[in-house]
Image (cartoon, rainbow, N blue to C red; front, side, top):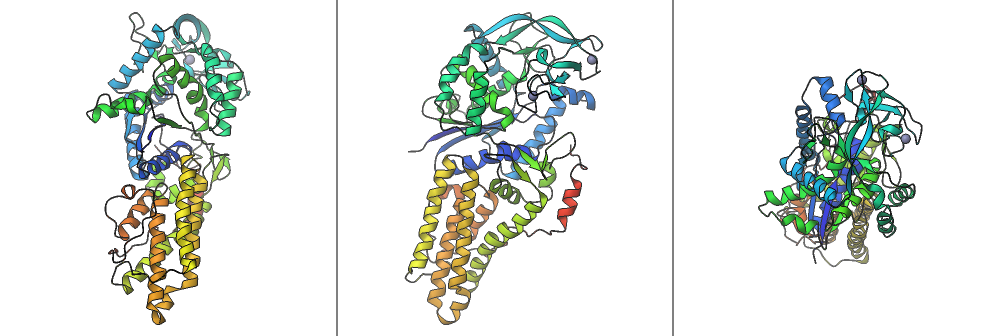
Length: 557
Ligand SMILES: [Zn+2]
Ligand SMILES: [Zn+2]
């Protein structure tokens, strides 16, 4: 029976371009997972959107002399373009600047308020007397009280990942003018997070299928106790509070951005003409997966689940397969120092599948992974082109030329040929188990090992020579190889959708790979093949030095 799978993917801040860290962390793994499940015939809803509110955006907009909505919309358009070019197959990629999202966020706020999970309190907030304004989150910086790093933001520490209250910062200062802020009383609303601690502990203890890093981080965080969190801010950009007398305040981004998962599902349903269609992905028999980078763990294993518990009648996350970080040429990725490979820049010069391949086979699943241009070129040329692309090309070109452009009729299969077909079938089976458990790196490795084995098979059978003495033996070997290609088109589809669809068409199949299902489908003898083109371009390794030299130099807007 078809399963129902909800996939929420981290909402990128619309204050700058995407880079490879984002892709390896959340967007590629979620897309692999979605494509795999759709090929299995499962019902998938994958959503995300641009996080358009928050102080990073207002700060940058002020610097560039733009309105925050102008700046955020510009990056939102760029994100949409990148998803399309990289093949990230969202059912909906929306933004937090929609009327629907405001409505859903306000409803959750009011419901939690009504049920006593949100309370009002007077608090001292940092106020810069020089700038004559309150300093929410990123307008204030200081030293982290947990890890002692400097330049720690007022909302979350980039170094140790802990959420921060501005009052906890050591040596705080205004980011706009550098002055030391005073604390001034103002009224705010708080989420009573502390009251959810025991419920969360009980729930998290049962999530034994979570990745170890996610489980450990969450447990240690919960054991340290939970502090109530201010939901509102004295700012002008964001979702208004749905209460009279609080016109100068907004619901802050940490509270409303996670609600985007629910509001996006509702928007998706409405746009499909089925207002209530979101329920089948939020209630009852459906598994919800949240793909995020590790800096986002507490928001998805503690804060969002607490909000859902308080609201009631909606599914909690089933799994939060958070990835670790991607380093670039052995160094920590840094957007401010341009130590990053920007996605739009990459996509303007190279193919999507080459990047998807490298980031899949070297995915930061259980530890940080490193991206280097030399590895990118090497893996493209030695693995994608030499192992897989050439295999496809020589089998199909030779068959087209010698067997009237059709899948040849095989003779009897010897044990070697039978064995290879069994391995193909077993590979799909093993990958099914791996992908289901979000073990992406291992899954793509087993597909590539099948391609290697097929090259060895062809070296032994050598149909290119055999055709002169024994046409039937040549036909049989090619038939077996084509059958494995038919398997690889499915197995590699979640990772390499563009080349897999091409291979699907070369092999004479109609429609899309997803419609074929997750199964070994032997192409019928006589099926007409299309003359193939190379699946992947070979890259000139002279460019490695050029690309490495651009790191730290080239900024991207
Ligand atoms: Zn810290
Ligand atoms: Zn100031």
